[in-house]
Image 1 (tube, helix red, strand yellow):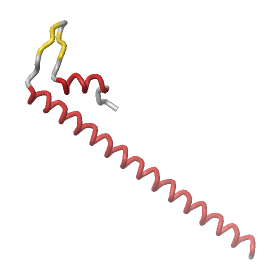
Image 2 (cartoon, rainbow, N blue to C red):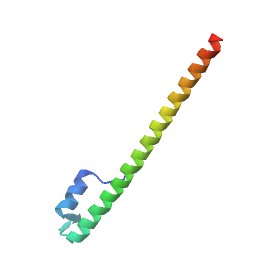
Image 3 (cartoon, rainbow, N blue to C red):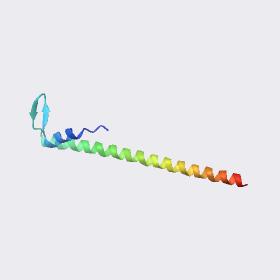
Image 4 (cartoon, one colour):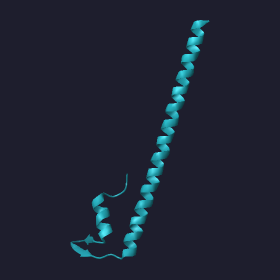
Length: 80
């Protein structure tokens, strides 16, 4: 995940940035814009992970179905 840690978000939220040993107060609109971009990226990454998880579940379910069908065919072949 490429999002910054909680400490960086806390600094952004507080509006304090340390640059070369100096502390300055950034423009609140830039801070909000940066936070918005981070939230958007986090949302995108979360959606991508959800899609991956859904695909893994679908593959698992398909695998179970194929396994069940193979078992049924084996039982049928043994009974005949």
